[in-house]
Length: 145
Image: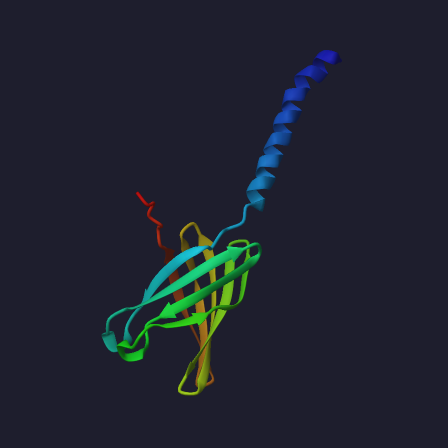
């Protein structure tokens, strides 16, 4: 009996270790912190418009700023993201902008996978819901030499 117990101990310890590793892997949270960029086609075949999203995760709170080019080649506009939530790999937030006295809301959702976010941007224009895909890539931070 003692011999059976001694031979079972390594197996029990191994199983407990594997369960602990699996639980730790599930607890690891995706960190969206960084600078993310993507481009959208310009109007009427114009130059692509590059948008930049700077995100920061502090505890369970995600904050950030979205910078996008102004209309007609105007200066870039920055807007704070609102109602940001991170649930596992799913990131959601909205951005409210004002143009000529009208407010426009864009709702972003995406799945973070490594250094890529893929998802949808939902807007409303003239009472019509619109949706388009977006894929952002995290900029690689270069180590200082």
